Image (cartoon, rainbow, N blue to C red):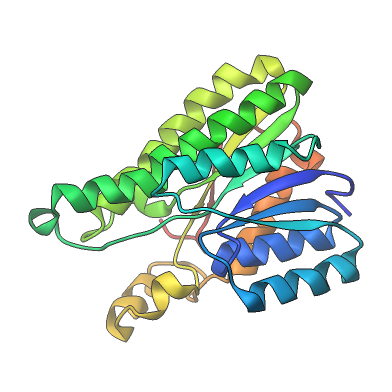
Length: 247
């Protein structure tokens, strides 16, 4: 078990990549603060079962990334447990696709608040706790659209590109304190974000990849597991593409 005994904060656990990551990390021995936007009975029942199966503890933490006060309060809840935080995985995010000329400044601000500003606030607080122990791993969820661009996704691409810039800078700042910072850039993954895309558009995106298929949430979670574990102890400041060979 690659994460046995480690304590991990994961955001976006309610579904998709976040849910797959929470489940995989628990099966690899991690204790988890499972962060979600809102309370859900099915989710809480599933984590109860997961705790019993894996012999770990999983604590749901609810907050909205649009509300900075909620982010701060949730960090206090996490740190009040008096447990070290070994890993932070920033997965939660949102998109509102629109061509550049159709984007309002309010929409742009909302995307950046959820995908970047609130995540930097959360990271700032968690890193302070990591600094006291001079150890930790932070992983940010970016996107290939931040690297390659994608028509109709300016706000999403730009916010995810900001995460890459933050990853590079933080990795240099925090390395002397034993904290690694990396990012994942997924390609076209089978999640709620892609399920509503028209078949024609989805087929074109899939056709760009060498593997000619959608990626799975668990495949992104596998890459996150590597970066969270000691297997990647000499890896920092990197952006790992998990995209099926889009180039």
